Length: 302
Image (tube, rainbow, N blue to C red; front, side, top):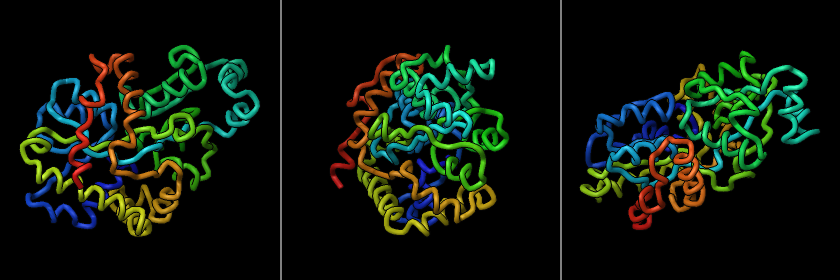
């Protein structure tokens, strides 16, 4: 997906690291995680790099796969208009009621489709952190992927969003009247976002190759830390320089929401929260356990 939680893919592709694998690699890009869930029904993908909630949906559907690496943590920012941010600073969670009283309508969030990480995290924040009802106290619109959300913000068609980099930085450099009012790292430390989900035909049946892939994933994570300037160039190339100039891509890497990792242990606690929410909201039939979601063995063997 053209978002920073898949930064390792950008590096792997642009640095030619896939060539180090003992088999050829082909990739397909999608706008959002739910679209990957739909495509996964064919069973053609050996590795999927997308949100943890869509990954849970895939596993819950019976597709034999587990998470072998995390891509990022604490990736989400809650953005709101500057006008609302002033209400927020004064009234806290009561700002939504104040907004409705002033405007005669509910505050409208626009984010990724239902069942995506931005959508689920937004609902968690509203309900568990603010003590409000995401169905009654606000409106939540599923707009599609990052480009659709970004356009809605730049066009002032929504009042706020739950979104990952580079969108918050793009909004900032365009002087759009939005700002961050909350960061996942504050209200859900270790918040999972994108993960690397590996089909069992690779994870179990070709363990050596699976290990090679996770090792390259770790190299890509380290590359971003060691050479952010080049990583920003790669992000701009993959996402598109017209949509993400190199300077903007580099600035987005300095965001606290750009916390790239490979170790899947780092997101275990947040994964359990998301698993509960996914089941409660009807996105999965079962509440997946840690053992059902993760295969730590490959990472731990590196």
